[in-house]
Image (tube, rainbow, N blue to C red; front, side, top):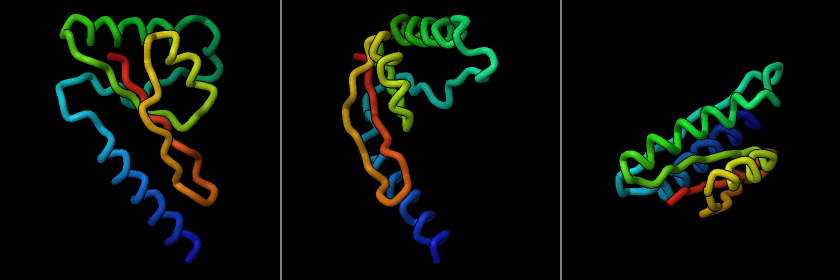
Amino acid sequence: RPLRRRLARFVHVGWRLAEHHPRAPHWHLFQLGVDPARQGHGLGRAIMEHAVALADADRVPAYLETSNPVNLPFYRRFGFEVLETLSGGGDMPPVWTMLRP
């Protein structure tokens, strides 16, 4: 039963994310990350600079989701703003949807 409830919450959050996902053309930055052993050397910044440059070249916004509050200031430095904070309930972390116009 606990696994079933957890899975149901996960699916519910997925549906809520889909509802908040932009409909207009945009870049969706999905699953960006740097190996923890390599963090702090500018790799994340390089990835983000490249990603936002591609969105800028296409003249469209960039969208992402994160469940780690530590990431929020990092993404804000690149012009992302929080659109919504979604709670999964229970032991699931919140998910922040972010957009860079």
